[in-house]
Amino acid sequence: MAVPRLESCLRCGRALAAPAVACAGCGNPHDEQDRFCSRCGRSLTAPVEQAPPPAGVPPFLPGPQRFPRGLVALLAVFAALVLVVAGLKIVDVRYFQPGRAVVAFFSALADRDADAAVARLAVPPPGDSTLLRTAVLRSDGYIPPSGVHVRASDIVEERATVEVEFRVGGTGHRREFSLVRDTSATAGVFHRWRIDGGVFPLDVAAGGVDTVLVAGVPVALAASEYGRRSVSAFPGSYRVTLPEQPLLEAPESVVHVGTSDPEYASVLVEPVIKSGARAAVDQRIHAYLDDCAEQTVLAPVGCPFSSYSFGEVRDVRWKIVEYPRYDLTVDEGGTILTDVEYGTATVTGKSASSFAGGTYPYKDTVSFTVAGTVTSSNGTIDFLPAGD
Image (cartoon, rainbow, N blue to C red; front, side, top):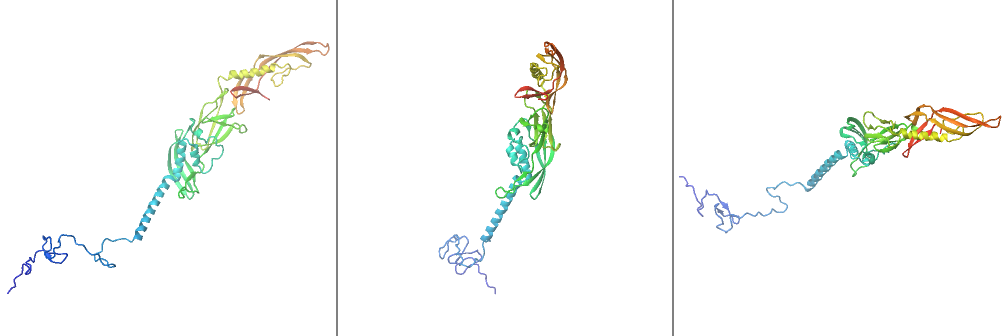
């Protein structure tokens, strides 16, 4: 005989198949819809507070995994070092590479700042530094390089080579610059690169003058070197001419410095006689000859004409009948008289007779030329006779 299945509790009448919620206080089961325990009155919907586990006993179900504090600190330090190294590398590449040093040098020239350009050099510029001044770079007679572009850079220990392109005088050029690394460090970390060289010789020559203008700056020429002088100059274009003077002028010349062709720059200034200077030269030469004619001797001292007599001649009088004609030529010795045509002078006087004790008239006509150098000084034209 089959035993009937119980559908509800014999004690409380609760349906056995219904889900039960145990009271957290006394354990009495209840339906899910019940709000309070029928035995102890405890709320069945309040959150259950779990008592902390005893000290030293880990919970049955572990919480989120925690790293040891020492490991976390070590990882943080490592991440910070990576960021610092990466930042230093970025700064080094951006500001302390040899290519950047060359670009900064050309930028200083573009800004017409000679001091900033010199600061990019490894050693003080050699030779004459007359042109290595900001006043020269800011002159209208100087044009800095443009279109600067670094093509390649090679570092071998403490030295580097940078190949750079730039334009001077409207023409593209390419050349290599050698650099050396500073022994001292910026911020104790970064070593700057400086250009070994960076300035180039400019040879200036001119005939018949002692000074030329390079980018508006006077450059004195050494007479012992036949009117030549070598000065140091930054890369770029320079206008060369003569200072304003009454005697000579010269067409303006432009010389390009620091380019690949030619390697060493040179310029020859070729002075010519000013069109209005001939009258002033004639005046000075005529004055010189007139002073000669004032002398009352047959052989005036320092003069191009003279007469000769066996006896004594008294009351000597000279007169220029025709001044000599000449051309002016400028050479390394200055402005000289060339292709001279003869002039004429007469001399009169009284020749003493050695027999009768009286005198008789003396007269002579001589031809002569004039030779010497014409110079200008302090705005005036001077004539220096040959032999003086």
